[in-house]
Length: 428
Image (tube, rainbow, N blue to C red; front, side, top):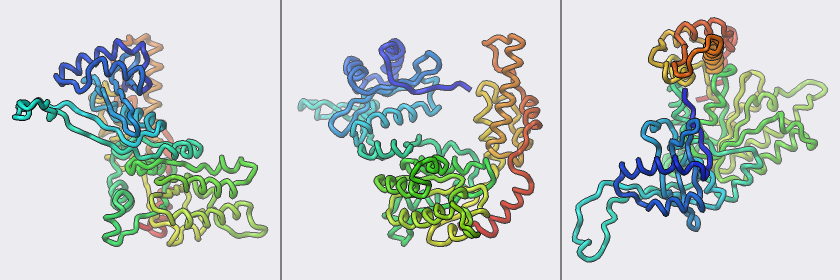
């Protein structure tokens, strides 16, 4: 699989820039901005490139004016389109502009030249070959520092679509979470209260973190992960750090807050003498209702061991939904395999065999098997001095061999307990 990356444009990239400009002019015929204007912006304003190895395959250049920015040049080499490069470049530009206090980005896109109208006789220039696009940047300048201090970030917008399969879980999250949170006014008309907090539970490695990030990506809200282990290292103590962290989160207009392995700080209380963690559990139980009071935020707690949680933690009023995330279905396993198999050999691999052979595998298990097969083929190629011009020598049998050597994360006993937990604890 060929990988590309995004970075700031450098003066040594100008040869690649000119090559893309020439192709761009051939396509659009009438550029919105002249070459000299675009070149000036590459030096004075904001510009990023997409690279594959040493090759420049995409360029995006933006110019800021007051609190708005204009994209003055934006193109991807034809052979590298439809691979997410365009979105990634625009996202990189947006992040750089947001730190400058820019609130919106606009693009004038060349269209086909239309017939000249009577306005031209009056001295007007026909501008109808331009289409206007605008995007509101979803985070304010003053929020950026807070987000950085919390270790949060804006995630790429394609995380949701990148989840292959798992259609039942995606449909549930889309309807219950995304729709009311993204359309609060419309939800209010129907008496729907957007959710404020949820629990995702399931065996290890089933993608709970992936779903939490995908929800933030889908909503285009900042994503902040709270790590109990990091808070515990503070001299103030875990409970105090937890309280202060959520106080800082209050400064963000919109946010998805994620706590993984929440059972570490929401353990069952009881016993004599009381466990030191009981104070932390008490603090978290007080924090959740306060967090829920303000709209525009969502707390996502994930656990591999839902039975270990304090019963009070899951009561109605603290969490709107308790949602199971299980092992990937056939469609999801196929999508996961496609993501790890090199693109040039994908047509010769029997995906159906791999999907069937990995029933009961978690996404992490499939990744381990795929990387094992790639590593074995790489070592074989280096040892046998295979030409670099040849396609990777990877076969279906290589992957099946790696699968046979992979120990699954989720045992039959754990899978059975998960089904029991769905019956008793799930709240959809």
